[in-house]
Length: 91
Image 1: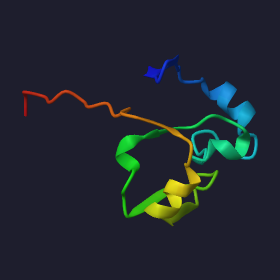
Image 2: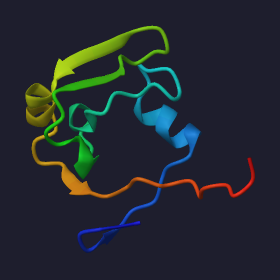
Image 3: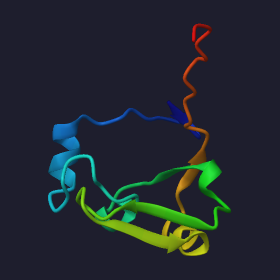
Image 4: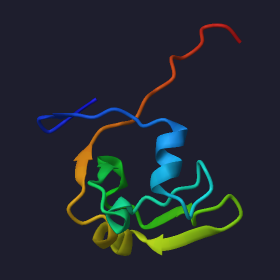
């Protein structure tokens, strides 16, 4: 994936687990800046009234106003990362 002029690749679960030691695998919060990481954000998230994300585990959910999330993600690169599944022609 190309973001700006940089090529980005997804990290594997073990590499991610080494960075987010205080989180369960698959439940990392979106605010990578807290961990000293560069952040990227789906541009479709801008302007949403509410945002929900896991709180570092698979039991707790954090709710923030979209404006608060926008400030939390300030400085993040924006891009279109959505992937659409092809429509099936069979019922």
